[in-house]
Length: 321
Image 1 (cartoon, one colour):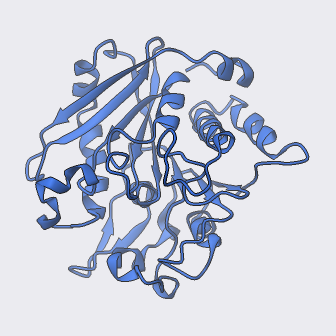
Image 2: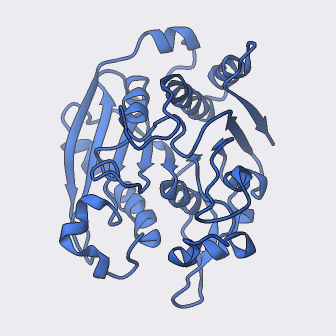
């Protein structure tokens, strides 16, 4: 993953992408096999990895390995191997009655453990996926997640919580993950978690971002008012930045709702803030952030920030600490 390519050249020269699905991993004790999609450019070596954790939502298939194509396709076309597991919380598994398994219905712990299982078998994945053998840089791994997937990413980056079932503090940090992206992720719990759906997510109540030390980009919509969880307004989704130690960056997208323009899929009818330009900006900014994290001499992140904040009608603002 060379740092010499200009940002313009990188955007204008996407590589063809190969996609392999389903990749099936048997995990002892898991109610069903872990299935994932792997997307990668057809050329290139020393490719970094992005583990992409899906959110929930009302769609039947987007909360699975089949979602988030606007991000996964872009990231893979620009030099990353993207691995998308179907978590046990997926609507595609509802017919299997996984809701009776421990941790139902959102499986906050299992979600994070899915990513650890994937990293444990990265050699196997590399060997199984056609044309991928010998092309992954195992030392460059990032995690990204949207909404509930952002919560999953936060745990893997070092955020902690207290298990509501046994009262024990839970530390699921994954040291092999070197950077992360949290997209419209939930904020702190405690008194802030006062909405009508709060009882459904007791594990949110004790989320502690003070231990989330891994570098991360937090992406929040300026109109993402999640009153079903909290009355704190859109600022709640900036908590993973505000309440965590540096190094962190915060991208606030003006006029964006929880879907950030529609990142969960192409032409998603449930998106309340549909905006293809915004989705493209999220893809570019997140790619540029992770590219520069793995290649510090690369100017992609600064160039992308300048582009999104420039002009008379900027798409958003960027802060860092």
